[in-house]
Image (tube, rainbow, N blue to C red; front, side):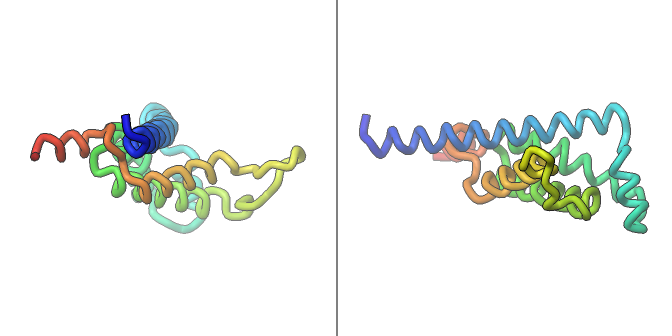
Length: 141
């Protein structure tokens, strides 16, 4: 196997791990909202004087888009939607805690920031060869 091929396989494997892990972790949040309702989303919208109805868009950002990320179809768009969802969640849900530190020296919202950074990375990197998009491209050839 050529070095370039091995490096490409490693890069594609890294893209797969990143896209599936970020997608799955966000999807779990979406599933919880499907089971238990909007909860804090509705509260954050009310606090910002926004209609609660727009809170239902969170299901696109936390259920639909993550599924597309996991499968690897329209990955860059899906990851962009997840990133936008996380940005809104940070700005509306935690406006005064964005850079707050814990007693142990970590960011209070480090998980949310990691979700945002991971989604941005997936949007920039794309799905890689281990994805539904790559399978479609191979089938066309």
